Image 1 (tube, rainbow, N blue to C red):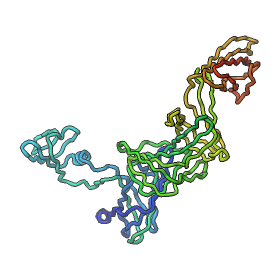
Image 2: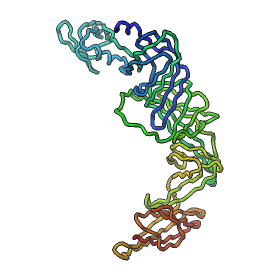
Image 3: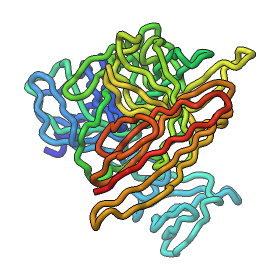
Image 4: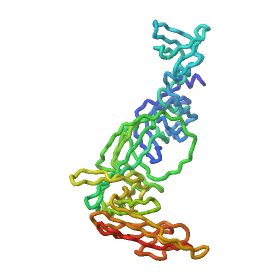
Length: 440
């Protein structure tokens, strides 16, 4: 049987047919390959390559009419000089030395990154690798692989060429969304472009693939880490698609399909347009939330709705915001990360802290009413040094059972822990908010 298997080894050398890649934002992908391959009748060994270096072998599913897979091995011990030295321990090798052109043949006993130890006619001899100009391996290893390979023992009912489909999951490839926003002079309109960045370090290039992206939080069971190849620096490639991704709801996630084939090369960062540029109304807000810091935050708010010019579910990612200065040059004004945002939901972007607005919160008094009830008086002063009137949203966070007993400005409770006030402040002016919180 061993002889029959050795004679029946076939290497999958046929070109890839259709290939589909579904990439998840958590850093993995589902790959489906279609090939037309030749098979021998009966039981044989079949080498299928290439496959990604970060493939998850347990997820492999191979199908072809009249074919059954009896055994699978994932071979990732890729040939190299260092690996061949290890594989030839206790075997004869020949080395050529730089000095004098001398050749030495002996049994290899050990090998490291600096030297090798050999038994040369009963004499233990150590040689520095920097002295060696050539190593000849006199025995060829039985299993020698130049790329990661799936090795199957399979049974075929006939000997002919068959249509096959292989699916598997692989790590080392993921995607994230990024957005470029431009606001107008009055900070009332915003144009938004969405981009997808695919980072491929899985060890394989996918030529002219049908590309899909999944946005959402997909649960995966944590397994022991598989062997990984060293990560190499990637090459950035940007493609501006006239037509962006087509979005659809899928299970409890969102699926984005590129309506044209795309090549995702190994060790490459690729950028694709997520959707055509969209415009929407936007509001600039000044927010003072002492529970975060003592600064007045600058935020932009817009509604992700079709009626406002948007309405596409937005995958989580970073929004970078720009604005033209007086000369017409775009300047960067801040960035923030948004979570997955369904349509018809509000998007709020924190850009930074206001330079010309100062706010101070002071605890003016504390009163014990009973063993369980007490009151606190607070004062918030807001000074506006801008050449225009503004409105600042003051946020108060409290714990436990509480309510606002008195207030100088009418506010509203937004949830069980939060009360907010909209405080107008005149040009180069000051406003004072006072309020009393009762705890019980």
